[in-house]
Image (cartoon, rainbow, N blue to C red; front, side, top):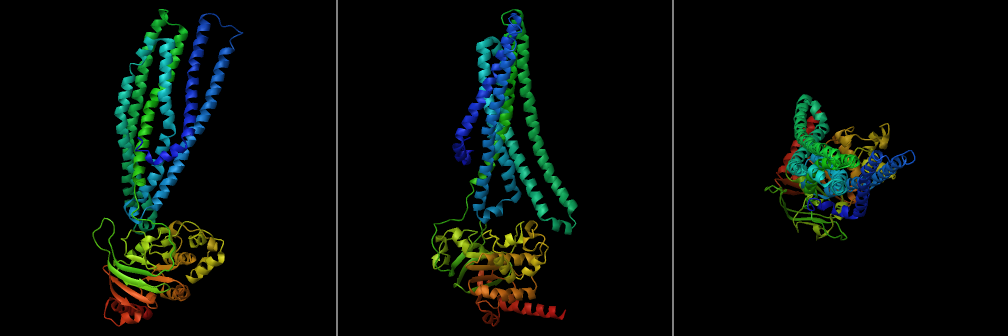
Amino acid sequence: MIHTYRHILDFLKEKKYKYLLGIIVLIIVDALQLITPQILKAFTNAIIGSTLNAENLWIYPTMILVVAIGIASSRYLWRILIITSSRELEFWLRNKLFKHIESLDQSFFNKNKTGDLMAHATNDLSAVKMAFGPGIVMVVDAIFLSIMTIIIMATNLNLKLTLLALLPMPIIAITVGFFGKIIQQRFKSVQESFSNLSEKVQESFSGIRVIKSFSQEKYDLDDFNTYNMANLKSNMKLVKLFGAMHPLITLISTISLLIILTYGSKLVINQTMTLGDFVAFISYIEILTWPMMAIGFVVNVLQRGMASMKRINVLLDSKSNIEDYADENIENFDIEFRNLTFKYPDTNIDVLNNINLTIPTGSSLGILGRTGSGKTTIINLLTRLYQVEKNMIFIGNKDFLSYSTKDIRNLFGVVPQDNFLFSTSIESNIAFSNNIIDDKEKIQYTANISQIDTEIQSFPDGFETILGERGINLSGGQKQRVSIARALYKQPKILVLDDSLSAVDTDTEERILKHLKTELSSRTAIVISHRISTLKNLDAIAVLDEGKIIEYGTHNELIKTDGLYYDIYKKQLIEEALQEEE
């Protein structure tokens, strides 16, 4: 169990006194509950012995009222101590899980589905919270209340009757042991089916435009129903199991009551036991019923908690493939690739093969190539989304692995192919690099360079316009230009445009490149594009094919060769001529 909960030991150590105090108060509540049957015993014996009168009648109700007030106030206190701690655990563990997931490299996200991660951060965390909240309460009740009740019944009332009442107890232990392991297995299946359902819902809602455009609502609903039914069936298996365990434990506890009623009444008739003792014994059996039932509940809650914690452990045990190093000042920003070779994790194909390339500080490099030639992979490696071997990439004539990941990424302003915008205002998206939106002039300046400012100002709320999920209320070209403004706002040393003008028309592209010219002159620029018009004015152009640089030079140099660059150039000239004729 310690191994299962190893990732939350720090929290438990921090909150140990709070939990300990809560358990002490809970034990006080349980002890107070054990007083009431003694009061009823004395009250019954007083009636039978004719010692009860109008003058002392008030004593017994007052005693019960005082005990009730003590129970109520103490119960409130343990709830504040234990249940609040379990909520704090959920908060603490969710932060730890989120922070850890954010620290993992891109290959982790390639292998793990969003819906599954969401299920871990919701249902699984809730199950752990229940184990360290109500679960602890039920454990204490099941242990302390049972033991103390049995001791009082055996020593203060009737030993033989107590032993007879406890005969069914071993059956409860066997029943709980049998059901416990099965509950954990079935709850794991429940969480996995919920993860699959969450992933399906997330995927369907994210891709709703595609689903509608292909009129696939019915088929998508059928697919959803399949996942939903699997989730229902896994839950029903667990419910049926727990539904069988709970009544079975209740039945066993009822057998104890029948034994007491049968044998205890004989003891009262034979006058070997007082009526007050018998009433107290019945009250203690009623108190004992809850701990016996709690055994069933606590097994269910603890097994669920362990199953969920094991699932969370898989995430927390995941390690990033990115090796980080101590901070070291980056004094110059020359970039050099030396025999750069790379293959993605779990593959045996070289995406990049012996790339040798130098990008001096302040220069601009264009990268051209067919789809799948490795263009974006170069950017992914430069920004340390994947781990690369030592002595392959250098910045400032030093292996860039000698710098911290944070310092490397701070150098870059990247406009990726998939322009992700957050569901917040346009100005917040542009100022994302520091989340400071007070510098309105800077926001408008970068929007002007990317030729999106006029369109933004035409919106009713201007730069304060709230975007839908992934910027759904903007066109593809608008999202690209907001992404360019976001990268420029960061004022990076190295600007990377990864096919970031593909969704804009040629006239807009020309205006953007014209405005970008000043910006590119003051920093290093790496521009990936399929359009020759985007690359032709850059200092150098590298042509990639199947992970290798097959051509390198300026635009004028490359069109003089009879290679891939010249073939693409001729095709695009023909396409432009045809468009002009139309």
